[in-house]
Length: 146
Image (cartoon, rainbow, N blue to C red; front, side, top):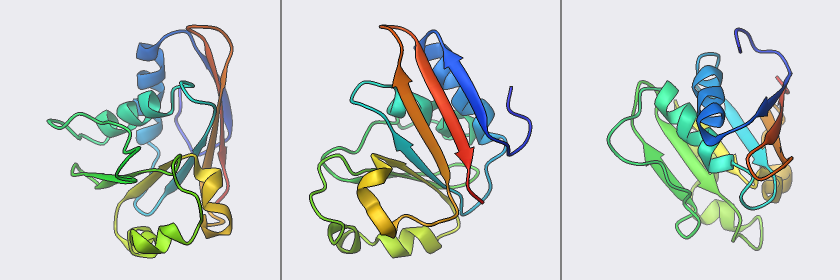
């Protein structure tokens, strides 16, 4: 499905297919990649991130959206730093949680509601937009901006 770092469009018909997309995407990720996710509530952002985590060999602790803590860290072959900015009101809050430090760590940063980071989001990033097509179908646009 994903064999190199190129823009793709993908349609998923189930959460299992969405997780599989995440596992495949993990194969082309590199240390210091930043992925920005956008899409309405329930679109499948966390489901795709679960697949990425599995593809990075992260096992044991369940991947959950850090809606109330803003960030979860997962150890695997490459560390995964999972941000959820849904409840963030101002970009200045990013500095309080060490945003710049996480961007400099040797890991992969995934950001739900990445658009809320504004100009704090690195220019070199992978943008993933998820659209709900139906109750079970999702449309993914993955754009590599690096």
